[in-house]
Image 1: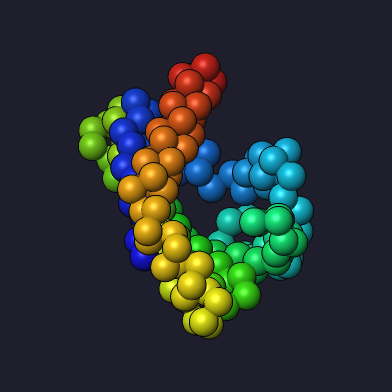
Image 2: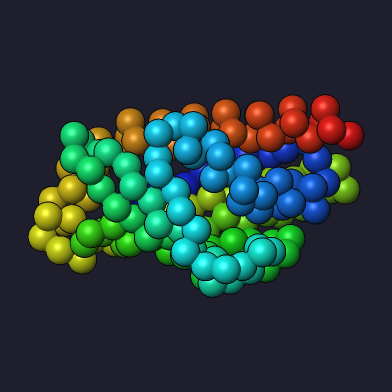
Length: 155
């Protein structure tokens, strides 16, 4: 199952990518939402190989996930692999310069079930794909809007 979203931001590609790869700020945002996050590597600067161990509640159960940054190409893309139980996900964030002051963010998440219970979960998600796609795009739009405001205010 694949989820996709694209948003355009009125800011230069370098600044957008720098904000998207400010992992310390993202970690703080995620923790404010009740997700436990712990770095699993010793990297000081963003690079392929960075990793996080996360803990969260989903459908009333405590879950764990391992997130690894597998590709980090400045200022073009970041690719994350996530493993949670029998479910694997690949998230690709691409940043494309449309002009000197306009940038497009493309995000694609592909869910890959590896166990029967993960297949059942993905199957139930597929049945609600329309609503999930809508929420995914809405979250992406909100994040892009906040990012654009932040970049305008810091200019």
